[in-house]
Amino acid sequence: MICISTPSPTVAGTTAKPFSSSFTTTSPTFSWPLFSKNFNNHAINSHKVSCNINVGSSHNNFVNNVDRRDVLLGLGGLTGVVSLTSVPSVGAAPLAAPDISKCGTTALTGFKPGEGTPTGGDCCPPDSSKIMDFQFPKVKTFKVRPAAHLLSTKYIAKFNEAIKRMKELPDDDPRSFKQQAHIHCAYCNGAYTQSSSGFPDVEIQIHNSWLFFPFHRWYLYFYERILGSLIDDPTFALPFWNWDTPAGMTIPKFFNDPKSAIFDSKRNQNHLTAVVDLGYNGADSNTTDIEKVKNNLAIMYRQMVSNATDGTSFFGGEYRAGIEPISGGGSVEQSPHTPVHRWVGDPRETNGEDLGNFYSAGRDTLFYCHHSNVDRMWSLWKMLGGKHKDLTDPDWLNTSFVFYDENKNLVRVYVKDSLLTTQLGYDYQRVDVPWLNSKPVPRAPGSGIVNKLIGKVKKTDEVNFPVKLDKIVKVLVKRPGKSRSKKAKEEKEEILIIKGITYDSEKYVKFDVFVNDEDDDVSAPDQTEFAGSFAQLPHKHKGKSSSKTNFRAGLTELLEELEADDDDYVLVTVVPRSGTEDLTIDAIKISFA
Ligand code: C2O
Image (cartoon, rainbow, N blue to C red; front, side, top):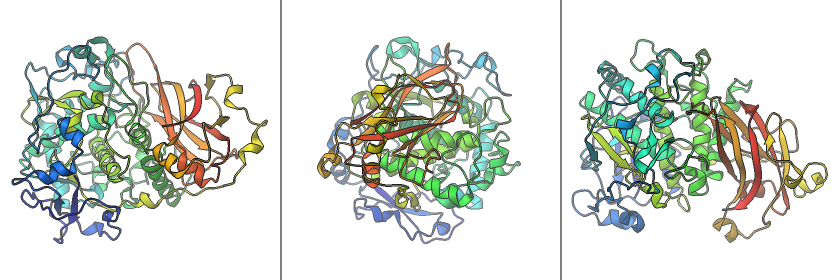
């Protein structure tokens, strides 16, 4: 089911109105042109939403438009199908929500803390013995998350007031600004173990796997409800930092007002009004603003389109009870999500606080607007159709988390209930999506280029793995097949996999990957040869300072564009960008997936 929100002709300055009863059954199923090329961004502040559902009378349209499997899996808040909300048994494969009464100190004890680090590394929420299972809101009010750079003064004032009230709550109130920020720290710095899944010695980590999108969706969902309730406005919707469109590529201005509650002093002072670098390497480059914008759009295309051709590439790899997330983060999580964190984080702080380090990221209000846009990417990606579908693995769908709601109730939520924003009562303002037309262009296309390198550049079986990334690594990787039919390509993507990346998890780590780029001066992101980036934000684990994971990039479209589809090998160049001195790689492979 797709809801399309269209700009209402009313004048800017008003906020998104509730449109409880304005659902219609007339809108067509989504198709690309609905990303309205001629959209007048500046005139929008109120919206009309049309959905192919008719709430209140018949739900048949909804049912017809939802994958039947999803309904069976309990996606049906609006359909009346009951969710599978039983408590997972010990040792069950999906990760069960943490037992917050067992929340421990984080790995941050002994970490060189920035000012205001939780005392003794403690990020734990107030305890509660009562857990409620999540119920879908009865969609009486519908929220439209607006683009932050297009907000009216009135909306900014409302957002500011809500944050101010949140900051005024006592620290031990689970809705307080501090407790809300701690959620992020608790779920990613080792405060929670998998004890409820039967693995008390294994930490919970919600980054670097298929839990990234659903965890953050739920986090923001409750954050937004709390803010709305504090200003008594159930229509309040969290703005999104629209960094994927040129006009949104700076920190939205109102974040820079030191008098506002939204302000955070711990941000990179050189970036307050600068064009964001979605591929940030940990230091400023000397590219011009125009080049940056071009590169940003190309990075968006790369990560949302050619590197996200299937669920695993987009969401990240599996993460089940009893293990750590080692299979690899999804395309958007790695970039632009991670570089944006680091680009905003303050280099004057020991650990890049606030946004530049996981434990402190939730202390910057910009975090929530950044993640609102990340969450929007999930919605946009699904609109691409075809294989762009939510995962169906029951262990993903049945993973649970707990959050406090606006009434201070501890609520257990499941991934399977997070798949449709419209079911959760919100959607995103429709703005232009310029990166869809920003496919990178080849720098040096040509069939057989790579053949000439055989004998000059080592093949993978001539390399002693693991290799260290203390300098550029160049290698010829054999393809499992070539010159495939269109049908074969549609069925399976050719994927470059960099396996067993062991890296220092206390550093900002980034490397870029290029294919068939012979030059030592490698291509820019707006060139086809640029295949993608691996990026990790610093985060402290208990008892160890390194992590292991994988990286993948889609090759089918790239090799076609580079006219290299008949070649036997691909030249892969891995270029260290930040914190890779000790990074090692176990293997580089190409496979069909
Ligand atoms: Cu939980 Cu942007 O990170």
